[in-house]
Image (cartoon, rainbow, N blue to C red; front, top):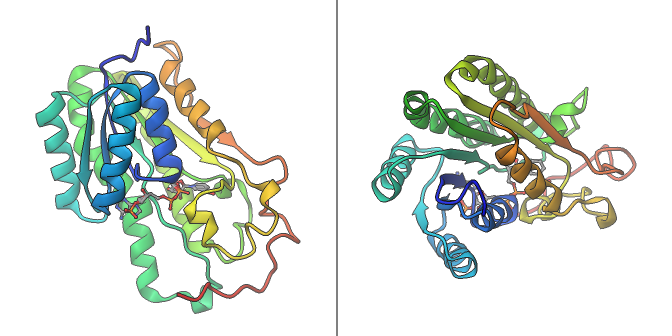
Length: 257
Ligand SMILES: NC(=O)c1ccc[n+]([C@@H]2O[C@H](COP(=O)([O-])OP(=O)(O)OC[C@H]3O[C@@H](n4cnc5c(N)ncnc54)[C@H](OP(=O)(O)O)[C@@H]3O)[C@@H](O)[C@H]2O)c1
């Protein structure tokens, strides 16, 4: 019997890709789920599929993590349905591939609000309850690109925000450990999802892409280690990472809409 049976997790970006794979893993561990993404249709479909397969309770909440009121609504509805929030898995993210001088100015805001502020705000909204209960697990899906120095070309704003997120997450671990709360960053390598499917050059050689399997295992590991242990960072990098030339050419055009 899973020790996690009956616990409650919020997972953002859970309608597809890495987030959905993590949701299926949590459901297998008998964790009840509150799932969030912007588009209601695919989110509800994912929620139904997971509920049917694993017979757990699933709440699907349409939510744009860029909007504070949507995050508040997500937390309130989750508390209302399940009571406490034991686990938060911040995953919703968008990518962007531009030579810096061509990157639209509004793209910076979209990336910062989704990939950084969305994570930090949602943590802030659940953390006080976790502090009161002296328990909780927060997992942030960061990026293996944060391990590259210098950062991968054409992904500077995306990757530098992920570097900031990684630093925040590590710092939060020290602030929260005496409150009994675990903070883990997962740094995935390039993974075959819709996000990478839209990028240019990255998927030329698909044998270099990971599936979500190792990330799912990392989440399970983080949630099942002994109570006095916290995996601070788990980096899962492709054996032959496509960040390395010549798979990504130096000159790249942004994909046409
Ligand atoms: N794939 C990779 O190679 C890779 C590598 C390292 C790190 N990551 C990180 O892993 C995370 C997931 O990536 P993925 O590859 O699984 O992407 P994906 O397949 O494009 O899925 C993204 C998910 O996030 C949701 N989402 C996007 N913007 C949102 C918003 N503003 N509010 C709420 N939900 C939103 C999407 O649903 P809606 O569109 O309906 O909102 C979808 O459910 C991201 O943080 C990404 O940076 C990915």
